Image (cartoon, rainbow, N blue to C red; front, side, top):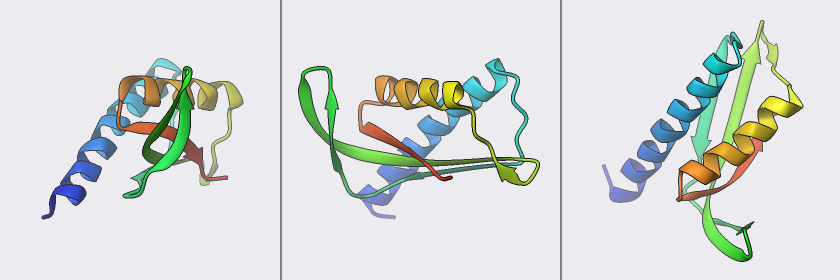
Length: 94
């Protein structure tokens, strides 16, 4: 396994822990959780600085349908980049 692939898997595992914590604390049951950290980097802004880091894509399904809760997603889109320095953008499958 090359270094990039193992790094991506490590980032996905870190993101999964944060997402599962947030799902549990919000008492949200789900059928499917998809997490994909892209191997390319995107430009983002954190504080007053531009960053060049990986985006992460999330997909959460509940009862077979896309789970959509704006407050929950807002918390995740802040929590993940704040806790995983290699990620600067969270995108959600709708």
